Amino acid sequence: MKSYDWNEMTAHQQEGRLRRVIAGERMTVLRQVIPSGPDSLGAHSHPQEQISIVLEGRARFTCADEEVTLGPGGVVIFPPDTEHSTQNLEDGNLVVEEIFSPGVERLNKLAPQS
Image (cartoon, rainbow, N blue to C red; front, side):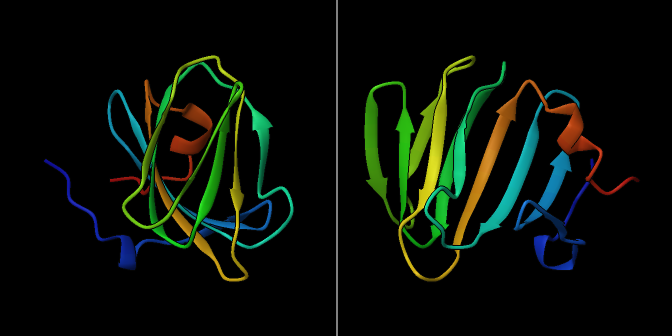
C-alpha cells in the first residue's frame, strides 16, 4: 500500500498549470490548477479513458459535439480516443482532479518515486 497527501506533494508547472500526479500500476491521478484563459486546455485526444472532477471553480467541458458546464462536485467522463477540451469559466483558478485508465506514462514521470 502507498499513501500520499496532495498538500505535501511537489507541484510541477507545465503550460501555465500546476500539476500533481499519483501513479498507480494501471491508472494515473492528476490534480491540476488551471488559470483563467480563453482556451484553458485546448482540444486534444488520447487513448486513455478520463474522468474529470471539478473541485473548485466552474468549467466548460466539450467532447465531440457535446458541451456541459460544471462547478464543484461535477464529474465528466471522456471516452478514449475522443477529442475533448476544458475551459476555465471564472477569473480565478479551476481545480480539477483527473483519473486516467490505463495510466499516462508521460504524467507518471511527475509522480513521487517511492
